[in-house]
Length: 193
Image (cartoon, rainbow, N blue to C red; front, top):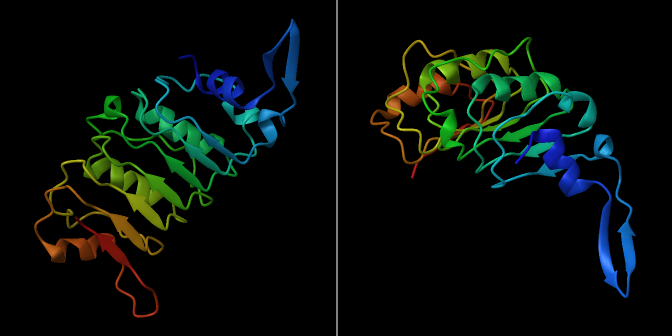
């Protein structure tokens, strides 16, 4: 599979299909830069490539789960480059494993509210980077990453209200208080299974 823009254009832009008897039907679709939600799950995507920020400028929801992404910096480039992005799912991209690195976010990205990093091998240092640079984050999916107890020095996010931690090795409920702020005025959930 090609890069992000090539895959998105193949799925979401104009189609031509054989209507029989030599006729070709064309379905007119909106241009890629006006689409708000793009799902490219499980297509073997390994690279985001260049030009995605302009080509996909209106995207608010992007699902890249179940692909072959290998670079956390690509994930950071998506978050930094798509200013309208509210939800990003990169779950089940096993090539991202060894997530002790950084996404290399170029600036604070307040628009992102939901980030799914389930089954990616994300580690606490990468999660700390995410929490620090994504101040609007309200939901963070970290299931099936082999994570232990939350480190005491993990930055607390005042906005995170849903933290998915199922199928990890978290043993201490007290350690979860690090990742979720204590406030009587807000509701937080740590979801373990």
